[in-house]
Length: 72
Image (tube, rainbow, N blue to C red; front, side, top):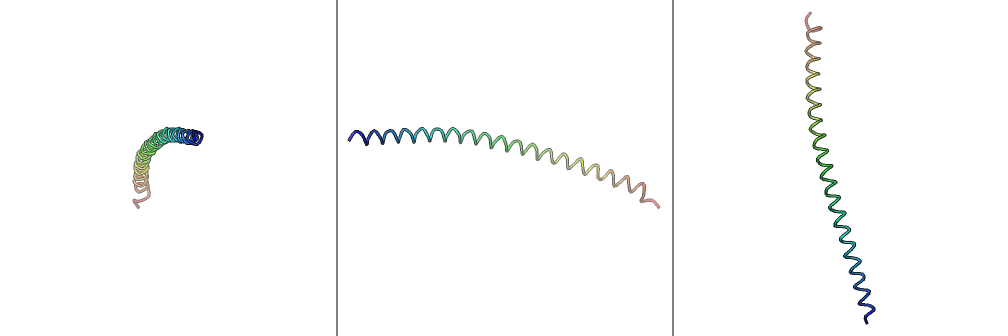
C-alpha cells in the first residue's frame, strides 16, 4: 500500500515542479511582451515624427513648385 502512495507523492512533486517552471517562464514572457510593447510605442512615436517631417517637406516642395511654375 505504501508503493502507490509514493508514486502519487512523486507525481504530485513532479507536477508542482512543472507548475513552478511554467510560472517562471510566464513571468519572463510577460516581461518580454512589456518590453516589445514599449518598443512599438517608441516606434509609433518615431513614425509620427517622420510623417510630420514628410508633411513639412511636401508642403515646402509644393509651395516651391507653385512659386516656380504657378505664375504665368
